[in-house]
Image (cartoon, rainbow, N blue to C red; front, side, top):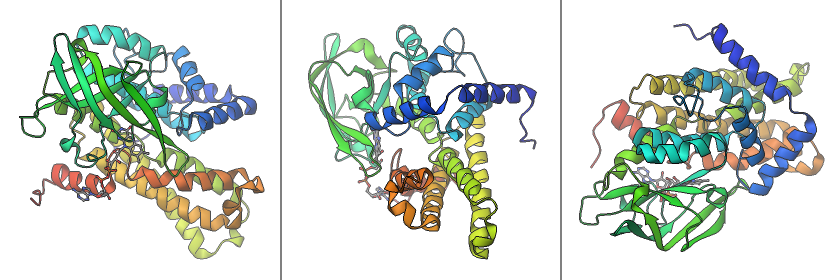
Length: 384
Ligand SMILES: Cc1cc2nc3c(=O)[nH]c(=O)nc-3n(C[C@H](O)[C@H](O)[C@H](O)COP(=O)(O)OP(=O)(O)OC[C@H]3O[C@@H](n4cnc5c(N)ncnc54)[C@H](O)[C@@H]3O)c2cc1C
């Protein structure tokens, strides 16, 4: 199997490098400040709009919305930008909203939303989890009751990332409480400026803001139903497969690892044999993570079922990120404990140490992902 990119991919990589090189330190600093002010890891509205101007949102989507690029080309784009410290979370989250519509939306929904997605005007979040329904998503209680040509929505969602800067929420609701757990669910696209919606901040360890979102008699046009009524589980499993095919910590960790190696260049004799061995192992593990991530993307592009291998990549990348960052933080020692020392690498490691804690929870916990791998990939029977 040949993993080397061909000339066409290298041209793509060169294009991304040229884009990255066009940003100087003042622009990068302003972008970091914007990410901090939005309180969302790797989300800058300014950068998102600049990607839109370059036609880089929805790259793999068919014309007229995207450029029908191949998944490996999109992979190179994300890798190049994220490995150089650019904030790519907005790109993945909004592409997920558009991807859901391309898979399940009506022609009218696609025509309404996709031009705004690729122009970088509309942003999307995902309202699935509730106070009593995280891993066990099927026990969710938010209700939508049909009333003429609208649904009336009541309930509460928790942990909704980026709701405070989003225009739309893909909201999973119960439309038929009589049906068995996954049958009575539907997926509604909800305009977050609708009356009756309250968004409250919930802060997590990494300095990241998620949200509690309350829906109180919110009127949602029935035309915003995505897919068929009561078939929302089918719609959302496509989203979850796509989400679990994202990189969960691997790309940022590769960047931190490269910066650490740069710092240590010429000082190998100051490291113990065991530290050198551990560092070598991390470099190999990070490459394995990169290949797993690419494998999921390519399988998705071939139309294969990725529900078993996406979670493998998610568990591997997120747990590896945690292990590497804990080790690197200890290696650099006290400067990571006192980030005011103005050691930028130490300060970034300290921040990533906190951020990485959520990587094994967001998008489904490691325990739940392992259950899915056992069930879908290894075809092992469920325990109950
Ligand atoms: C930073 C962050 C951002 C998030 N963003 C979003 C978002 O945008 N939209 C959204 O809808 N949700 C979001 N989530 C929610 C996330 O998907 C849930 O937190 C996650 O699925 C776990 O659910 P829970 O927190 O309710 O924990 P619980 O489900 O209560 O789990 C508690 C513990 O029990 C374990 N456990 C539960 N069931 C099993 C089982 N069957 N087998 C083995 N162990 C089990 C879990 O692994 C965990 O350790 C986000 C979460 C975080 C932390």
